[in-house]
Amino acid sequence: MSRKEIITEQTRALMRGLLSLKTEEECQAFLEDLCTASELQSLAQRFEVARMLRGRATYQEIATKTGASTATISRVNRCLNYGTDGYELVLGRLQDQYLQD
Image 1 (cartoon, helix red, strand yellow):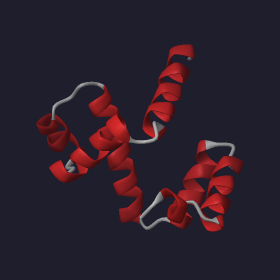
Image 2 (cartoon, one colour):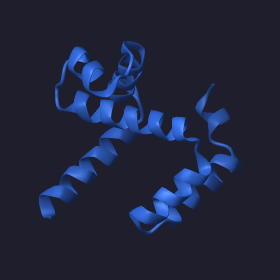
Image 3 (tube, one colour):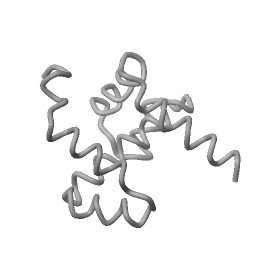
């Protein structure tokens, strides 16, 4: 699926909805309504995989800690290396936030 096919008016509306959230509690409530428990766990798992890959963990360490398959780890790694830098943007901002706290 191409980027043009992914970025539709519906996905733009979802992005605006996400951007409107102001607290972690609001985000949690929205994501719990939007996603199934399994979908939310999968998103969280991919985010943890990205964090661990960025920290130079091995595939084996990541698989053991997160339960992610090597296919999932490879996909996330491909996004980190050749994607649109979304993971890097968010992980960098979170790191900067923790440094300020």
